[in-house]
Length: 375
Image 1 (cartoon, one colour):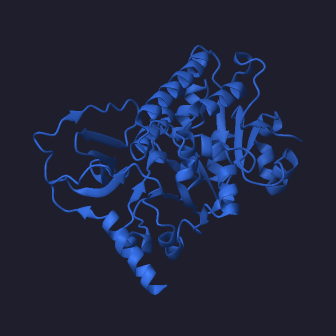
Image 2 (image 1 turned 135 degrees about the horizontal axis):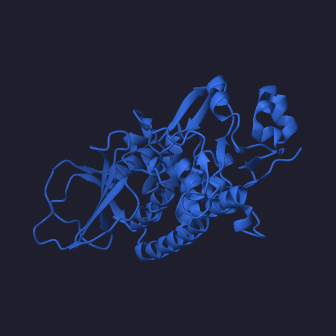
Image 3 (image 1 turned 90 degrees about the horizontal axis):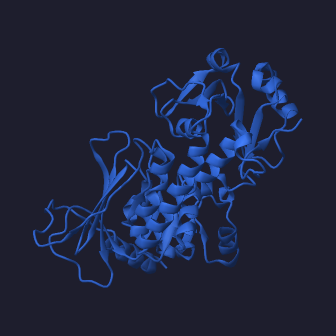
């Protein structure tokens, strides 16, 4: 068993080797344009011999987080490749750390390539549950400390991860398996994040399909946005609840703030220039948002969240106008595929938001994620 483990490790180290030279693109390599329309977090250079995918460091945008050099499996390895992590494509075996990227691969039509996942209890996808039951998908444990021996046993060709600032991947990095750092969640616009499906497609030979799918997503999203473009009343919105002694509030240039703006509403801190979330005191949130028109709450629980349970958590919540006026809408992510669908179908969420803020624009619409909170 020990010999088998060492053999697998050696093979995977060869698959994920990094090229240390900084050789420029060969002068005779034909460059194929790859136009990116909305995303800011990646760039693609395509040549006749390879495709170079560069992930921008979202915490220092003047730097590159990771370079990947994609080379067709059916072609010999070219000489003078630029620096980066080599991946032979198309990929057929993938380990995935998050439910989000399981959803992305399913939408691309390559869900059968997933051979391992982390924290499956948080993945609301039937095909993952079925794969775990029949043994075709392995449970790799916690994303923060996955089972390395299990990863080596299933031998994925790549691992999809979500990077965090100033953090590494522990022992997994030593396996040599290419870690594809999916920083899509750091995009500031819904369509920017959705465009990452075109990046994922490069690893599976699904470029044409992804381009067509993304165009459909864009057209659908823009059509819903246009519905709300002419509204004269723009309600203000409060999100989620406090965590301990602080309340994490999205900034005015954040991903969720863009959603509200496109749906004809405004985050209560719309003028905050931050693109991320800020931890505010509960007193500050109440001072600034006690009169917000709507309150949107996401949670993951077996039982539905109600006005009664919310007030039992903290009677202070009952002081907000949205509570008093019964303008709270909730999304239970335990029975809705919110996180799995959001990155590639922002149009779904936008419809829900327009329905909440301006129901007259979508008569007869049945919301996908949110519903009015009950008594």
